Image (cartoon, rainbow, N blue to C red):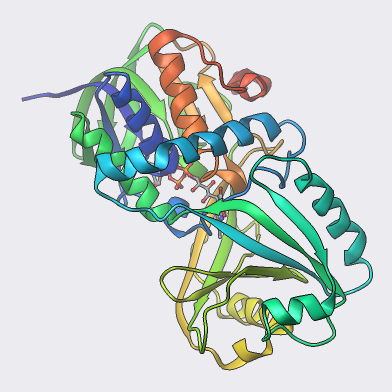
Length: 374
Ligand SMILES: Cc1cc2nc3c(=O)[nH]c(=O)nc-3n(C[C@H](O)[C@H](O)[C@H](O)COP(=O)(O)OP(=O)(O)OC[C@H]3O[C@@H](n4cnc5c(N)ncnc54)[C@H](O)[C@@H]3O)c2cc1C
């Protein structure tokens, strides 16, 4: 029998699974089509930070949407954990941003300002002796730092699974498959063509992350999303776990609930190369050893590399595809795709079910890029 679905969602990362979840909450069943397993790309191997106050475009064009997405995460945690049966370990983290050299101080003072007066957040300047008391293993010679409290973190692989599992419990489906093309009539896509079959559909969501450009030729629409490679090494922890995320000199240490110190992260334009590199592992280690000398001999327990979906203006691409009546783009979340997953899921589901959303996605319409391929 021919397969059929109300909504075909192409891509089972955080974006696609969040759309499936919020659609299901509105009573719309979907089919998530994923070729490499749910959350097995960037959504499974990110650092999982939910940081709404800083980053590219914050403060700025990503600020309001980042904040709304952060609030949605907070509201969602208990119910999604219960609905899905998956605890993705949403928690608030404390971080120390370290000044390694004099030129770091001004930037850190600016970060400190961003935290002032924000509900649930606080930050203060730390002198070297304060830092030594909070984290005694930090290298001597640090000039000071900023203590930051209020950012949250999740296990992003489990979050992605949780969105999908909850959607499935509400009647949606996850289907393994590699989408090859789309079949359309007029301005509507009515079939998704896979390597092993076809699915008839009422609407389509393109949530293909860094592979989104593949859909340009299917739709005739410009979707400028490029892959930015990022690597993380997970180091064994000797002694007491660190109580804070630690950052400075280009290195960050995230003590995770799995007992390991995740260290990274890197940014390289290397096409679709997803191979973890020995050289990069070495470079990450050198940077974090400057923060914590003890990590020089810590064993690498896991080393991951994956690709962020990045647009030319570092903003997501959300909304109806130009000149199509039933195709939505949900991609391009760049370095913030875990934070933004809730906002992406809810805004796209809102648009699909009511034609509008109260979330601040006005600047992210696909039309802002040249709409048609030349
Ligand atoms: C090292 C690193 C650290 C990061 N840290 C953070 C962080 O702390 N906080 C944060 O908010 N963000 C972080 N990010 C960014 C975040 O991980 C991404 O923005 C996010 O995961 C993107 O989600 P996505 O669903 O759009 O894409 P993906 O997770 O890449 O999912 C897209 C899916 O589509 C599937 N797909 C593509 N084409 C097809 C096809 N033709 N048929 C079927 N399936 C297809 C792919 O297999 C993939 O599973 C980090 C990223 C990296 C690399």
